[in-house]
Amino acid sequence: MKNKTIAIVFGAQSYEHEISIVSAIAMKKVLQHKLVYIFIDQNRSFYEIPADIIKSNLFSSGQYKKFGQLYLEKKGFFKKTLFGMKKLEFDVVLNLTHGGDGEDGVLASLFKFYEIPFIGPRVEASVVSFNKYLTKMYAKECGVKTIDYEYYTKDDEINIENFPVIIKPVRLGSSIGISIVHSKEELDYALDVAFEFDDAIIVEPFCKGIKEFNLAGTKANGEYLFSMVEEPSKGDILDFDKKYLDFNRTSQAQEAKVSKELINALEDSFKKLYNNLFEGALIRCDFFVLDGEVYINEINPIPGSMSNYLFSDFNSIITTILENLPKVNLIPINYEYVNTIQQAKGKA
Image (cartoon, rainbow, N blue to C red; front, side, top):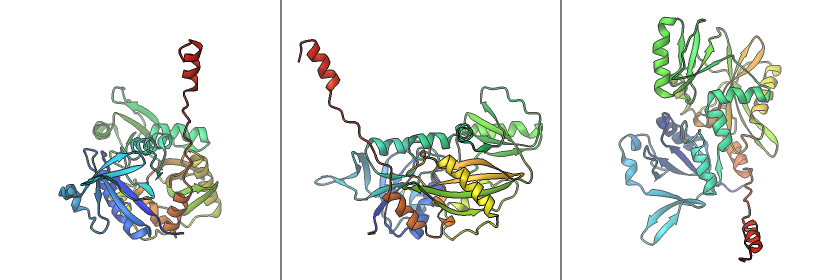
C-alpha cells in the first residue's frame, strides 16, 4: 500500500498537554507514513508545525506561533494565503491529545461534525473511558470485574475507615492526583490533592501484591489485533514520573513471562471492553490480576506514544486501522415531513 499522510493532532486544553507533545514527537521514530503536525495551544488555536523541525522547546518558548495558524472547516484544516484559504493535505488525523479535549470526546465531536476521518476513540467511547466511575460501570455491564470502589464528590462527607486505600480523580490520567493513603492522618492532604484536579474521586482498597499487566490492541474487519502483554515495572503504584517515560518510548518493551491461559483471559477481557464501542481506535487496557482473577484498572483510549513499544510492527497496525475506519452514515434530509404538513394546510 502507498504510504498515507497522517496529521497528528496534539496539545490542547488539558492537564496532560505537555505529555501530548512528547507523545507526538515520538511518532517520528515509529511511523513510516508522511506526517504533518497540528498543535492545539492552551487557547484552543490550531497551528501547523513542520515535521522536520518539531521539538519540545518550540512550545515552551511560544515559537510555534510563528508558524501558520489553521482553521477548522468542513472536511479539513485550512490556512490563509494571499489567494484565500488553502486546505492542509492529509489522509487521516491521528488524535494524540491526552487528557481533556482529546480523550473526553471534545475533539472526536469536532472531527465527526466536520467530517474529518480520524484514528481515535469516538464520542461515546471517550466519555466512557475518560471517566473512571463510568468505566467501572461499563466494565461490569460487559462482564469484566473491577476492584471494589466508592465514589465521592467535593460536596460529600467522606468517611473512610479501612486503610490503606488509593484515591483517584475521576477524570484524569497519567497518575496525576493519585495517592496511596495509609491512615486517617494522611487522608485530608490526599483529598486536597485529588480535588485540586477534579470535583469527583473514587476510592479503592490498596491490594498488596496485586499484579498489573498492560495489553493494547484494536479491531479491524471483525478481527482483533493484540500487542504483547507487558508487566510494567513499578513500586506500590505506577506514578507520574514512571508513566511519563512511557510517553516517549519507542524501543520495544519486554514481554511478560506469563501462561497462555492468562494471556487468553486478558485478551478475552479486552474483547469484552473493546466490543464495537472503540472501533477506529487503538487502546490499551491496564489490568490487575489478583488470586488468579482478572480485573480492569483503566482503559487508555489514547495511550502514551500509542503504546507503540508493545507491538512488533506498530506501523502496520496504524495502517490497518486507517484502512478500516468506521463507516459514517449520513442522514438524508429531504424535508418530506415539513412539506407534507404544508400541503395538508394548503400552503404548498
